[in-house]
Image (cartoon, rainbow, N blue to C red; front, side, top):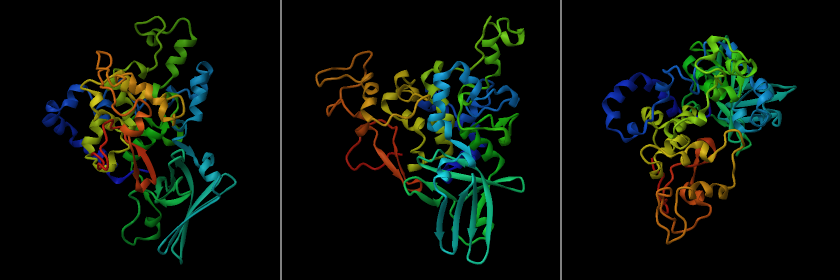
Amino acid sequence: MLRTDSLRKYRSSVLVAPLILLSSTLLSPVFLRGQKATEDRLLLRDWWPRHSSPSREEYIGPAECLRCHKGKAAAQDSIPMGHTASHVADSQVLASHARLILQDGRYTFQIITAAGKSVYTINDGANSVSKPLVWAFGDGHIGQSYLFEHHGTLYESRVSYFDKLGALDFTPGRKLTEQKDLESAMARPVTDAELVRCFGCHTTASNINEKFAGEKAIPGITCEACHGPGLQHAVAQGVENLPPQLAGNEPRADLIFDPGKLAPADAVDFCGACHGTWWDVKLAALTGLANLRAQPYRLEKSRCWGRTGDARLTCVACHDPHRPLVHDLASYDKNCLSCHATGSAAKPAPDHLGFACKAATKNCVSCHMPKYEEPSLHYAFRDHFIRVVQPDAPYPD
């Protein structure tokens, strides 16, 4: 949701991925770095974001995680990742905007919220159609998209809320270019494949036995979305003598996935399962600003990433997934200076291979990771392709 049409090309590219990999990856420097497409990762049995679990009962929910991990689990509810999707009744955007309206030609789009219910209506001047919304996608700091149900199928509204506007506008790529019937102008049905992917990145425990199970999904990205189902882990931590089928080769196995132990290339691919790995972007043929929000892909284009990656330059080296995003640019200087020499006379060393910046050693991000406005999303995203930016240089694909 809230994505351009080009992002959806990835789903169809999965079918041709093996052929592309056979013909090109062996010659690609990225192949040597160990990067993989997310769909290839999901073929393996090990846990990975968006993975399907055999049973919904394997998930214990964030309340159970909170019992032992009070700091991290409690913080999850205060960060955007914890609110990537919500039931409409819990949407703060809709609760604080009782009436949202967009006029486009003969169509009037409107969302009215009252008593915890939000009703989406389209009117063409003669007729109208209304549906109660059921899901809100996005925490609202950029925008929020909406789903409703009709005859057992989930539909995506053609309008979304955008924070910069404080109002509705068309969901990127969803505005009709020609006149259609009222229902088509209102929304579009979401395919099963889209539901699996969208809910897989916006909720927890939505894919069970390779099928979409949205009715039991846990809203938002909670602990188990990244660490995997927690039932066996909870049993391992709470029972002195584990049953043999749970113990494995260790007397007290953790039985939970720890992404903090991944190698740099794998760690970036891990986040890229939802944010876009190098191969995800290449296979989807995303060009121009369409790949701006694929931060892992952009990061791996950076010269400082090298051939095998660097633990000092992974996503979690700069961003703690258990805390809100830090907006103070100066706070990232320590990350840059962990690789770059300081002082104009300083030269690279084995542990500081980057040359000293000739301009400054403060607010590095402001120069080397500029922001670009994505017009369809009404938001400026910071480019994670770290480089020396030339004045007035166009966006580098």
